[in-house]
Image (cartoon, rainbow, N blue to C red; front, side):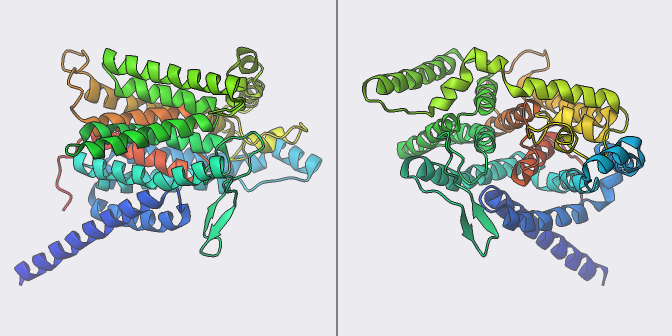
Length: 435
């Protein structure tokens, strides 16, 4: 009788694993092009992940840590409406926001961090996830290039508005793809590029397969340049440098010459044929005087003043835009830096806690992937290509959110926590049997 029960139980666990993993992969594939549909599949995978790991939830120190951070965030939301500043702002402007709404950007994703780990606990699973993510960007490339070169402008709605591809008619001539903002498109492309590179390095077989992947690598890099996003260009450079660790002179020279060739061709065509390979807006933004006159310098300065005024509990989930727009005519939506935004909303302690956790995962995973026992760089570039690219992807997207904020786009925040869950498994390989 016990054997029959055990067989049924094992059968149920096996089916749950299959259901959860399939849902997870479908969710990652649809994440960028159909985020609401993807969310349904990812929620299923999170529920399954919790079920299969339920006996170990409180044994994981990261989970306990995130519970503590969630408590700090909730406490900030409770205390701020009672403060003098909240009363003054509401009486002066008639504006008020629900501080608890902002928690949905964080606490559910803290939970997903644990749920996703079950489906990323081996190199093979992470590789499948990475391939799913890179395949999910192919519709984005189609959307972006049709927008930029064929003037196919949206928004396009599918399934009665459940899926929306913006494809904006951008007056600055910047590629936005399915996103509402070119910086968001560039952020995703830069974060996914390392997976295309890893696939190119790992593929074995026909030369045609290599050529196809090389073309997609170039198309992705070119799409990043078409977004005219300095942030994304910087994130791409960071990703390139990481995947070439230790700095392989051959690849470094080829990459440098490729970038120089692209800019030379753009100058040539612009001079002789009055054609631009890239938006002229990109070159304007790269001029040093525009960099130093960037409004985000002023935004960061004011953000620090807000933080100094309420350093412990922050402004209770009321983000930068709410505070700023009470006293300024020019609208800004956020503080252009996740650590600053967290400090403003929930206080310095919360910001340091989350920043510290992410930094720890990056440091430990870098040490494991790139350094040997003697703390010298591992010279075997073919080892752990997808895991190294996983680290490069995470570093790229975290860099992007240090000097801008893309996190509040659901697709990007989910991607960040998927990458962090993968880093956790790379760093702390699970040895216990879950069932």
